Image (cartoon, rainbow, N blue to C red; front, side, top):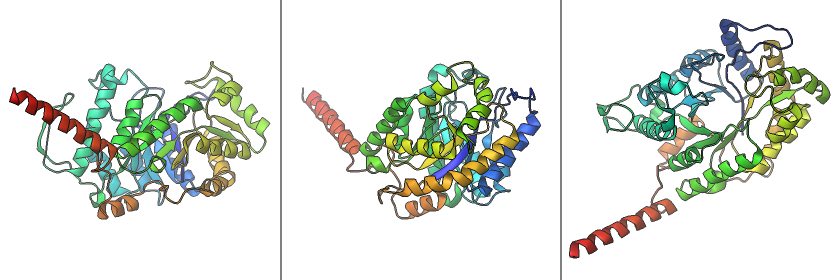
Length: 394
């Protein structure tokens, strides 16, 4: 089980002091936060991707992640969203493979469509094609990392003729991909089709929706023959604010919640905490709430926490990292390990992916021979062949 923190890089005025960090201060604070997370025992640090204020998360995450790779030793560097819809797959293939080499494999990424509609026309795309862009662009990215001398033609970019992306992935193994989605079943299907991971950033949704999306992904993962449903790779997002005294946690966090740019001036903190995974309270309350997630989705591989948003000062963010690292993570690791079936895989690492490739156990996109997906495809083919034969005999 991996635990990590992620940032969306919002620049928000601190409602308790009226101070607004500069872009420079927020960027440097992000670097400090990632390094502090490694020291506190977290496994993953992830950054969002944005192209618009009030966010200063990088428009090209490898810029930040490469810088962090040079200053960290163990922590996995990832994305809270890589915008697969508006970024060119060729550029993604090149940049993340390069980052993979610099970080000695400590890299994976979460692909998503993003939640800022105006980004699409800025990059010459139409938001009405969001799902189609996600499907086509990832298909190309998937091939670029696994094939050389590609001939390719699609709907949304110029064709490629005899093209090879460089550098090739480290050890000829592509970075692991999590397909991130809040609301789109098509993305859960996409993750299952390729045998990739599914990341549900459930910070705004109730548990019934989370359960439904993860169940769909698990069912389709098994359908494509990548393993049993309970062996699929699932990651979840979450939010927490911790204090040794639960009432003090609520008192301190309330002004930030009430004025947050995304959910401020809406439901009360108490109502939002009931409807979503947001947990504001003591370490034990965060532990108990996070352990509930396994009851929702089964044993899963990665849990990420958002803890630096809504104008929280950097001193508080670092204190949150220390508090969770010391009082929450050790117990969560111990509890999540209990009664975990031996055949449920750990979160993929580069070393695991290299060994899987060497043993010939890589997932087969669309379903390996013998899977239900393969059987259904064979049945459709036979039906078409029979229909063609009957028509030819007339």
